[in-house]
Every structure is written in structure tokens, then in C-alpha cells.
Amino acid sequence: MKYDFDKVTDRRGTNCLKYDFAKEQGKPEGVLPLWVADMDFPAAPEILERLRRAVNHGIFGYSEGKEDYFRAVSAWYQKQFGWEVKRHWLVKTPGVVFAIAAAIRAFTKEGEAVLLQQPVYYPFGQAITDNGRILVNNPLKLRKSRYEIDFLDFENKIIENKVKLFLLCSPHNPVGRVWEEWELRKLGDICLKHGVLVISDEIHSDFVWPGHKHLVFASLSPEYADITVTCTAPSKTFNLAGLQVSNIFISNDDLKRRFNKAVAQAGYSQVNGMGLIACQAAYEEGEPWLLALKTYLQKNLIFVREYLRERLPEIGLIEPEGTYLLWLDFRELGLTEDERESLIVDKARLWLDSGTMFGAGGDGFERINMACPKATLKEALERLAQAVHGEKR
Image (cartoon, rainbow, N blue to C red):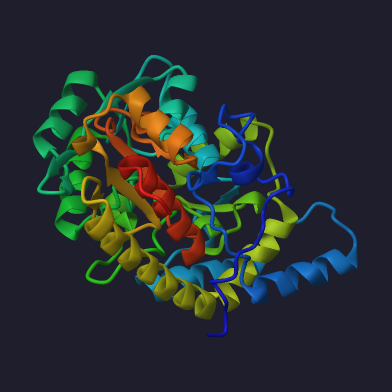
């Protein structure tokens, strides 16, 4: 293999949020972290080479992306998803969460309701409440180990709460759903019917597993595009989160104007110069690395699935259709939230993301990140098995 994903890279001592801040986050030293959604793999060599050239140049002034930057981004979405974007749709921000918060301020007023679908990526809820808006939940329903949308509740919540903004997570983090076309169209039609704008977080779109296909929500019809802010980034795909660059697409001129105003009110202009370089390199030269990575991660998924079945049958795996984040069901153990936390942190010495932080429906679940060398994943599962069963390793 051209790329060695088995190599364990020591991230400690690099001011790494994942590894170096256990104490600050209330965790004991020595826990093995599989929580935050970045990867334990170095970025693609092709990206690193362009960053080295920029470092060697030695000047880090204000930077902006030119036509070749847009060509790289647009070509990626055309090739990967059949979505043709126009340059004037693009707004660059330092991150998707920043964009979501800006959109909330741009399109709603304090005291107005914003709809989401929990359990969902917890910064969604924080962005709503931190900006003085009312969080309205359309909870996902777990049926036969697969999450589904309650469309009747979705529409009723919109009507009852006069919702004008909906946060869509597609693919869904943490439950791993890749929404089918009929599901997206049903959501879109309800939103059109009631005048609801859609903020579509599609940051995990490049990680979709065999048998599933990611569909860009705005690509399904001009009418959907006209009510949608599509949030994308290379950060999850190519492990570039610290370089802070996201590409936000808004085809409706009025929505874009209002969004840009909210971004400007935050005092923000140019994004990270190194992020621009890395993003362009990723979309121009990173596909071979990504294909190899996805093959590796599929093997990690098989390993987790088989390990749980053979050694930890009490813990269920919600089969992921997309993302490299796994949603594990601990409910059969019959533990309280505090007891489960003690099992994972104190006994297994692991740092995971407790399901409760993802909102209603998350109790009894844990999110783990499988984007790491197999040896790291194996160590984590063995620690967990020992904690649950008292096994000797």
C-alpha cells in the first residue's frame, strides 16, 4: 500500500485536543481517546508537500483563494456527487459550526425556534441556545437498529413552534444514517410548504459505505437549492480541522447577502492561508489517499463488528451507513449514566463521547471514532472487554 495507515503516530505533546487535554476535560491521565472527530493519520503526502513549500516561502500574510481554488472545490463536488456549483455561491468560513451559528443569526431572531433531529452533533444545539433561539427537537426513531425520521412529528413541530430554520445533518452524526432520496425529498417538500430554510451540514459526505450514496440536498431540485445553505469542508475527509477552512454554498442571492452580513458582523474576513493551500491540494491530488483510507476504515469497521459479536455481545453496533464515527449501544448492560462513565473512564481507561451530550435519545449510547490505526482500535476494545468482563489481557 502506498499509504501506511497502520503506522501509529504519537500525537502527545503536540497541543493536540484529543490526546493532550484529558486533565483539562476532567479525565484522568493515560486514557485512550476515541472521542473528537479527527483522525490519527497524517494528512496525505501530496497535501504536506504543498504546505512545506508554503512554509519554506516563509511569509504568512493575508491570503485568499483565486479561480484555481474554486475550480478544485467545484470539480470535487461535480465528480464525487454530480453537483455543479457556481463561483458566486461560495462563501468561505473557518468552520462549519461557525457557519451554522452565523446562519442562525442571519435567518432567525432571538426567541424564535430552530429545528434539529436528536441525537445529533452537539454543537447544533449549542449554536441554537447560545444565540438565544429556542431548540425544537424532532427526535429520530430507532427501529430495528436503524434510525428513521418521524415525518409527522417533523411537520407538527414546524407548525406548532412556527419554525423557520431547520438544521439537517447529512450524513448524520452520530447515528451514521445516509439519508435516502425519498427521505430528503419528503423533508424538502415539508420545508417548502411551510417556508422553512435548511442549513445542510454535509461535512461527512465523503465517508459513505458500500450500498449507500450521499445526495447533496440542494442538488435534488432548484426549489430545494433556493432555501438551502450547504455546509462543506475538507476537514473530516482529509484530517485538516486545525487549518480552519470550510466552503459554504448558497445559490439564493438574498440568503447569501444575509449570511455574509452575519459573517461580517462577527468581524471575520479571510480564512486561514494554509487552510486554502491544503484544501486546494486535497481536492486536486488527494483522491488516491482518500480511496486507500476508506478501504482501511472499512476493514476497521469489520474488525469492530466482529469483535463486538465475539467478545462483547452485550454492546450493540448501530450499523453505520456513513461517517467514521460509530454509535454503540450500551443499554443492555443496565448501567446508569454515572456507572457507564465509571466503566469506560475508570475501568477501561477510555475517553469516548457519551451519548447524552447528543441530546434526547442518546442516553445509553457512546460514540467512538474508528479513524485510527487498527492497533489503537484493538487496544481500546480490549480495554473495554476487560472492564466489562474482568478479563485478563
